[in-house]
Structure formats: C-alpha cells, structure tokens
Length: 336
Image (cartoon, rainbow, N blue to C red; front, side, top):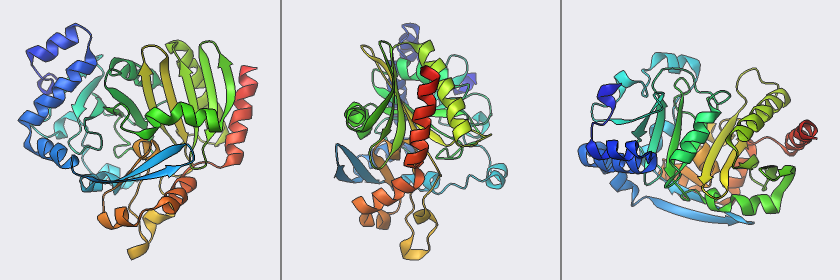
C-alpha cells in the first residue's frame, strides 16, 4: 500500500516521534487541501442543522446530514455485499485518497463523507470480515495513540458497519458525541456494578434508552482479558454463533486510562426504517448515533424527529432489561 501512504516530511516527523494523533490531524489538513470533494463535504458539514433533546441526566442530538444517505441506506445483506466492489479496499479507493500506515496492519484514511468535524476510517490493509473478538487490542491501541484529539469507535458487522466485509474502525473528535462527556454521570445514575477493583471497573447500564456495559481501566491486558470474558458470556446469553450485535466507543485519558462503552443491541434497524411513505424514518443507529448524535440524511425525517420518536427507535434496537440483568449476574459469577 506504499502508494497510498502520504510521502510527507512533516507527517514522517510526527510518526518518528510517536505522535500518531498529530500526524493524523495534519493528514486531515493535507487531504482537505488536495481533494476537492473531501474539502467541500467538510465545509458543508459546518452548516448542518442540529437539534438537541434533553433526557434525565444526558442529551441526544439530531443532525441533518444529507452526505450520509449512502451509508444510512446501505444494503448490507450478503447478496448486496457480494455484488458491489468493496469501497475500503485499496484498489477501489478514490485516486486522491491517501493515508498513514499504522502498525503495518491498518491505514488511517480521512472519511470523505463525515459526521465528525474531523473524521477518519481506520482500515485494515487486508480484505477480511469486520469483527472485534480478536481485534479488540487494536481498538485500544488506536484509542491511546489518537487520544490527544480523537475518540475511536467500532460498528459490528450486523449493526451499523456499512462495510461488514472489510475490517475497520473509525475515529473522530473527542467530546463531539455527548456520551464522551456524560458516560460517568450516566453510569453513576443508572449503572449496576459488576466489578470495582483498583485497576478495573465494570458496570452494566440502563439509562432508559440505551443498554451498555462500561469498562474502565489503565491496564491494557486486563481490559483485553475482561473483554474476552464479556464477549464469551454475551455470545452465550444471546445464543450467537456469529458476533453478537454490538457497537463500541473507546476513549483514552492519560490520567485514568481507557473507558470502553459497549452498546448491547437486539437488532440493527427499528421498524421505522421499513415503513412506507410518510411513516418511514431513514435512520440506521450505529455507534455515533448511540453516542448521542443521531444522523438523519433526509430533511423530512430530521424535521419530524422528537424525543418520543428517539425513545421508540432506541428502545427497539437495544436488548431488554431481562437480558441486561442476566448479563450482569453471569459476569458477577465469573468475577466472584
């Protein structure tokens, strides 16, 4: 992938000093300078319409973003995937798109159809399925190395990834999603403690809209081991041979370490997506939506959206209270 990697002296200086976040930020500046479509899309993003809804202890925003129509409406069934070219493979990237090689396994690319003010796709250099079970360590590495400016997210292959056939993460501005600021407050109000040790806290959370599990630790290996235990337990609970439905937001802080939020999903899209005519709402919740920025590519949907509809959509796509309680109890037994 050498010809896809930016041959830029300043980027190389940042990389030599180990500053991946600064190198990525400069990559963004270069790509917006070199690539007209990309530059125009980020300019348009500055004037998108936003509405904010306040819930008990947290907020959810709605963003009208017509540039996300392809992603939101993407057909992700096996037949459709097989019939289209993979847009994350090197051979199919736009000629202008270049990036930064990361650990000889991933390439950091600017996302030309952004939600975040600065938005990256962190793409594996090989065409292989989206999965988290054995790639979770890379999520943690990206979180730490990009932490100066960015949060890292993962969308499961059956609940938000528009390229479920090609392994990738995403990164965007820290604190753009309300949950980056609100997670600890939400957990304090709505959380149930599974583990509370000096270097590991695990909580299950039900804030009325979302069900998630929150991991906090400054010990990378401990987090990896804890996630494996959770993954196995959750797979058994959901009776899944494939990857159980989940979305992940990972944020790193130099003082406190990692905070990893795993959203626990029951389905990809709510019934609103499949309605006819005026009842249809084109929304396909993934990590960013669940993090508090719901994307609506059609203006009529954005205009209609209100607290009640957000509640309907979110509650439908998450697991129920019974499953969350079972998960909590099963994990407690493991850590006893």
